[in-house]
Image 1 (cartoon, rainbow, N blue to C red):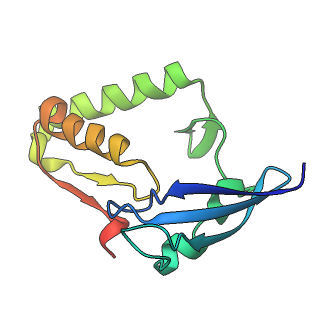
Image 2: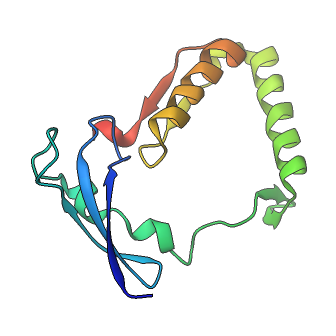
Length: 135
């Protein structure tokens, strides 16, 4: 397949830096700043430059896990989502919405993080949201 360069916007935080991602055999091998980007003019933070290895990590989860009898067990998506909904409903009922919080993910898109905060406010009824993209 060979090496190719792909221009993209960094999704690590909300700044929107331009990146050039070098891909070889369908795997990211290098990331550098896009000098034509008006936002970062070729500069990147350490996360933008080096935090791409998670994309191809062998340890990455590929199926939901639920702890049963002290052990993490593979579950279906339906089972996992039902379990989560049950637990969140129970926590909200028993302890109130401010007993919970959500930690948003800098590796998610801005759109995903937007939906996360909407879920926290509209469904869970709380404003306790934080994220790692400010560190």
